[in-house]
Amino acid sequence: MSSSIFLLLCWLALACLSLGSVLLGQSALVLLLALAKAWLITDGFMELRHGPQRWRWLMLSWALVLAALLGVGLYLRG
Amino acid sequence: MWLFILAELTVFALLILAFSVTQQLKPQLFGQSRQLLDTSTGLAMTLSLLSAGLLAALAQVQVRQGQSRRAAWLLLAAMLVACVYVGIKLGEYRHLLGAGLGIEHNTFFTLYWILTGFHFLHVLLGLLILAWLALTAWRHGYGPERCSGFESGVLYWHMVDLVWVLLFPLVYLIG
Image (cartoon, rainbow over all chains, first blue to last red; front, side, top):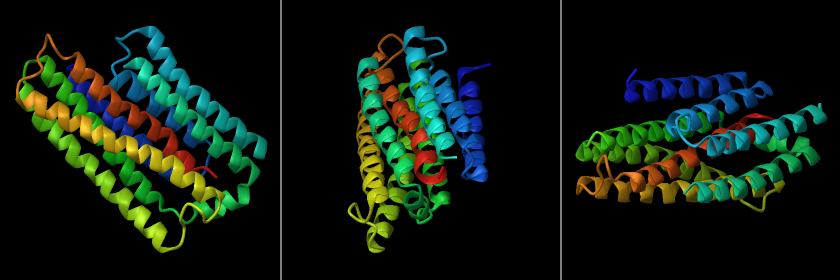
């Protein structure tokens, strides 16, 4: 698959996930979709799937830790 | 560049956590205030930023293939698409100010203005960077062997996108 097609597929997935987030509304599942979007940007747009793994994991961890903390907050509030 | 991006992400993480913790303390206020925001506007801004990110990434592919003029056109398109975000955001700010929902209205809007305003400034800086990259690419300043500066500029834009994908559900959706 060419780089351009791969990027287009990433964008399509990002657009679908964004639409899905709005349709899900206030559900905490929105956080999972946000995490998937962060992964697509990091590995797809930023090309970190081929890049330095240390930076890749730092970028992915940033989104993962934040989404987890936001999720814990939502859970605690019930 | 990666260290700079990491530093920026850390600052955004602190702001996002401040928003989230305050939301825990004042859930009703945040729920009611969030209803005053338009979700479809948030979606349109998301699509605008992500589309600009796609065009910037495609421009990077062109630079690596030695097609710097084509890359410049793609960056110009990315800037135009990103300007849709700027226009919508300014419209939203104008609407909120007109409704008396400024930074001092309540805690939600204080954090809303700080968080989204800080991100908005990053988008403006990103636009300037894309303009610089487009100009340099048009003058054949980049090529397959000398594109690290170009890649750093495009990375900055993707960071702005990355922050927005977490900021959007937090501010507009989850309550």
